[in-house]
Length: 194
Image (tube, rainbow, N blue to C red; front, side, top):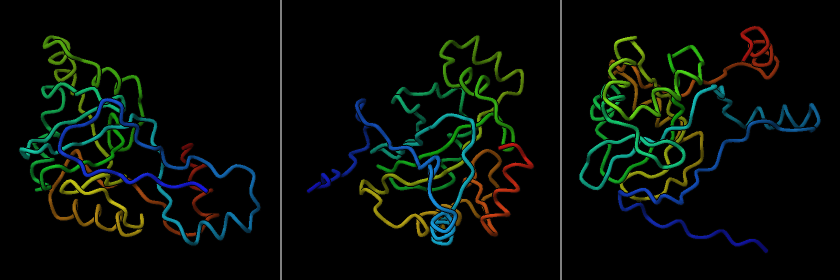
């Protein structure tokens, strides 16, 4: 019998050994009927070709952004995102799981990695002078006020949408969601070449 380990509360400091699970990327070889059943019970979101970014509000209430490898992203590279995170008024000891993309509707991992890996002031300034700005699509809440989020994803997704609503955010948004039937989503994926 598998026993799930208790997830400890978050103290505001990321453990460098932490690994955040990826969402299910595909369903493999399952029947059309099973796909439709899962679809009817699911919230399907688009997987972007960006990079996973953790948005952390530390124990003092200060925001910071980290790569999936728990490396701090230089604040100067993402000052626009840190400013928007403050407007979300999240409690200390909170972690949002996001997809970092080059633009809201454009996937470009090369540009994203250039932004994420820039540590030297001259490289950061060169990227900013080119107009390069990282965007975040929030797809999950890992911790809120130090407590692990165990809510069903449908509830978490509604909360993420309400968090971002009516805030005039330019760079942070909820992950985009497919609406409609399974077939309509498949057609959109093919048409837009996702």
